[in-house]
Image (cartoon, rainbow, N blue to C red; front, side):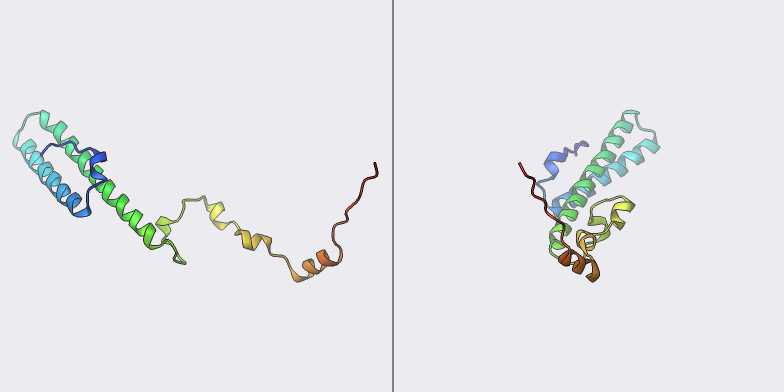
Length: 124
């Protein structure tokens, strides 16, 4: 198995193919680690690094696909899991919603109806 995995090739693959490829890369990584302990060449360290990066790439694609599927699943639901919600600052999370911000009391509403803002016409 070639150690380097291109991320562009991974996006089109199914989850089964990705998990199979992940197992292959992990087994290769384990054999390389055993060879390193047994006293292998220093070139193995570069291949170990490539294998580790390949594992990370494959897992990144798997997780991204899972998250996109979850986004589709929760699209029209009332509640969204915390990790799928947009990342905001603490202040922005506590801010009033648009609906809450526009609410006014009954007394204020009556005052606006009975005493609207005056409109002035300017003489030319």
